[in-house]
Length: 330
Image (cartoon, rainbow, N blue to C red; front, side, top):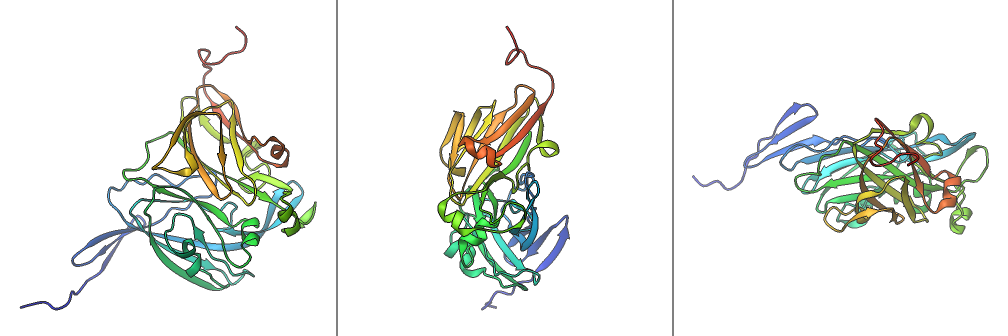
């Protein structure tokens, strides 16, 4: 008897946030993406094969702190600035769900720089308040990518906080490290000095930001919020810069980057023994280094006047002294 059509039977088996789509003649693994707020990074992918990865993200408009005594009308992904970080592997199919709650006032969409397709997904993902849209893409190129909103007047959506990082691991994953961190630089152009402020487009056009910050607000990586690691740790830092105007001169005072994955590529140039690395607007980089000595290491944009505007943070390494590498005196 000759079969003239395929009949597929689908069975869904839930297990630890993952499920199998069992079809005849194929077997496909699917999972829900872990999304993490900065400075946290999603766990490395341990599965061996490809998968369909479901990413659920919503737009959220909210009022939050941008500096001491000053608040801002943020537009965001996931209720944080920067938005959550996602992690997939090259070859994965990504099923992306973008929702815009009824409580929002603006339409939003998403342009993921890891997407090969119209608008990076923005062409098919614009959602009015109360809507959800879905699009699917294959992760073809390993690297660290920016995502951002591109709806309407794109400068409004980017300047108000709608961006984040999307990591596509290479085949086989990344080498193991002891600590991974997510750090993101952005500029804010505000229409007031105190109270609740919003975006001032005239300052944006003049490229005169009031704030240049790491992880969404002044002091986000200072005081009780410093990054923490131990002496001897190998550290990998995923660093993004949305701009929207400035190029970041990213530097960690007291450290030398053992590796810099230039412009976030995981299939291209790796520079070694780097003091400061340039990260363009809407670009990213991955830096790796080993902490040899205890102490406080200061993250800055070494376009140094930006430090006064908030582009400063700290990584504190705890552990025994290492006088063979560094000591006071002779």
